[in-house]
Amino acid sequence: MTDVSQGMSRMRRNDLFWAAVFITPTFLGLLVFYMWPVLRTLFISFTETGPFGGSEWVGLDNYVSLAQDSALWSTLWNTLKFTLVALLGIPIALVVAGLLSTPGLRGVKVYRVIYFLPVVTMPAAVGLIWRTLYNGEVGVVNAILGAVGLSGTNWLSNPATALYAVAVVGIWLGLGTQIVIFLAAIQGVPKDLYEAAQLDGAGRVRQFWSVTLPSISPSVFFISVLAVIGALQTFDLIFVMTGTSNPAYPQTETIVAQFYQRGFVDNQQGYAAAIAFLLLVVIVAVTAAQFRLQKKWVHYV
Image 1 (cartoon, rainbow, N blue to C red):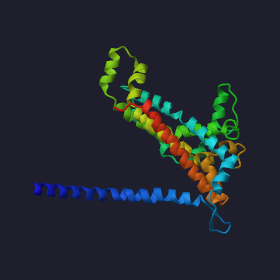
Image 2 (image 1 turned 180 degrees about the vertical axis):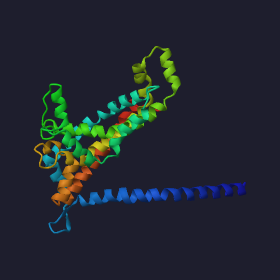
Image 3 (image 1 turned 30 degrees about the vertical axis):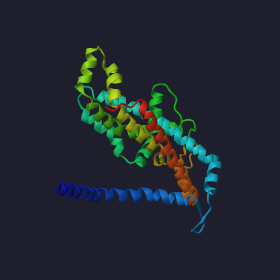
Image 4 (image 1 turned 45 degrees about the horizontal axis):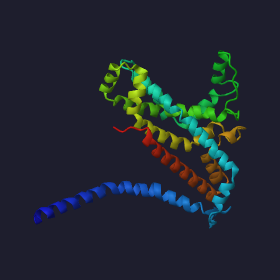
């Protein structure tokens, strides 16, 4: 028994050793590239950078100023509105993925490539192209609306439409990834569930709502978390499509754009760090709420 126990103990130590070998690189990567920047940003948020470099400890002054900054809360509201509109891409991707999963549909691979192309395109390049398409005088969007008897507008310079026009582009950019994930999830749904639904007289629409959607709800939850986190961090697309000289920029400025302005233009690094930490808190809070609510509608098999 002693020899057996010693042998098992050696095997256990050997397993623990190799587990540590494989885990250590990932742990060090998380520590260096994730945890340290977070802690460093938190420290900087309690300091103030001088005009010629250097910094001094100011305590909670940056957070007090942040709470009293109406412009900052306006950018946070813009960010939340952009996020809510961006979430509309999820049902669109669901419908497209459902259509592409139709049995016998030809050219599915071609459709996948077409929908996925925006994902591998730089957001800055996409922003420049769509800025031309939205142009109030020579843009294709207004030309199409005029052809069907509707009047267009200066989409990106109109404060009432600028944010939503950019959000539409954001939805278009993210559709490819969402559709591919939903297609993979739909293909993993057991066929016998559809056969049972057909025997009960359910059509394709009813099958989608009663069989497909509950079965792929974990994928829907996963996509919703990624979509919210990505939308809350949006910067380059809005910055390229509108620009600071745009009269509608205050209505489209996001909290990340405010971070960029304060940290890299105004050289208020401490205040910018406080903004970054506020954004981190918002993302963590929203993600935690999503994880709590998913218990009511996500079905794990």
